[in-house]
Length: 352
Ligand code: GDP
Ligand code: MN
Image 1 (tube, rainbow, N blue to C red):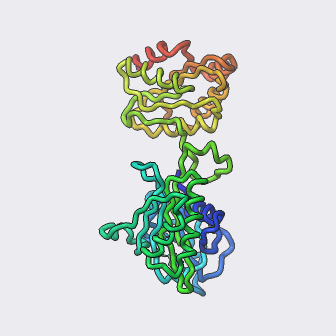
Image 2 (cartoon, protein in one colour; image 1 turned 45 degrees about the vertical axis):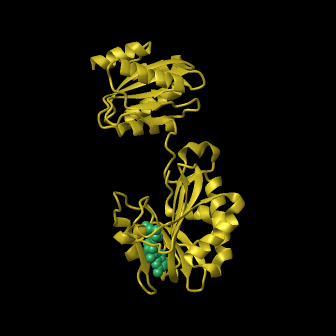
Image 3 (cartoon, rainbow, N blue to C red; image 1 turned 120 degrees about the vertical axis):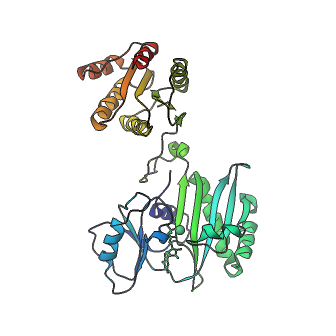
């Protein structure tokens, strides 16, 4: 799950990492006073290069600039909000990020002396890369200061690195990228921009997470982009058996999904949304053996999905166990067929 810049910066601020003063600006809000920077809050990067970051000088009309940003589509996304920030008096822009190095399963620091919008073209010159661990993080910070030529800010940089490390670990981050890390003319280090990606699978640990992008269902696995039969099941075993049965029938399963015991209507609706992204799916097999999961909850989600999505593929449903009688009543009242077991479902799928 990727955070918007303002969400990422508010996490940084919680860990005492300096960020510019700023606030959110929605269409129609009272006009803030220039000078300021207006930044389009969309998920994709590279906003600067396409005009998604605008410095509005003193006496200029903020609303006019804001309106143009609200209309500017960046990689298919228009912003719902802008971030209005104090203008930084930039002396130099650096690049700094923490990420998980897959081969060592360790957290890696990646830095570059020349950050900013042209970082990709700097890829020819070496990035500074070093693994980070809590025991030696102070000297890592010192080494970083030396590499960046920021010896004068060594202590501030060490603090920043330690805070960033704690933020990374405690937030279950996969990536935190500060680009640019700004050195101002009065020698302050400030996170000018931040990109943050958090691990969806850790969302259960963070009941306070409330970001614009919702965590993906951690138990939704894409099997074949061009699969024709999608699956919704509960329990990993039953979900695997469902996928296997589809394959045995000579059909191509698109996904594996275990909705788990705590399935809610909202969660199941998100699963339908994920399924609708497969271009070839023409059948959805719903195979629920309700132990903890309530079949009537699943039935409610099915009815809502039928209402909300015009192009829902045919459903082949088998529900048994916890509250399946109530579920059957709900569905039959709307003329939806239920099947007694998976093999009958699949017979029907195979017949089209
Ligand atoms: P990105 O292009 O999506 O990564 O957006 P950034 O927030 O990184 O902004 C892009 C560029 O805009 C930065 O590299 C800076 O050069 C410039 N910029 C952003 N904020 C300020 C600011 O407060 N003052 C000045 N002078 N430039 C800024
Ligand atoms: Mn940036």
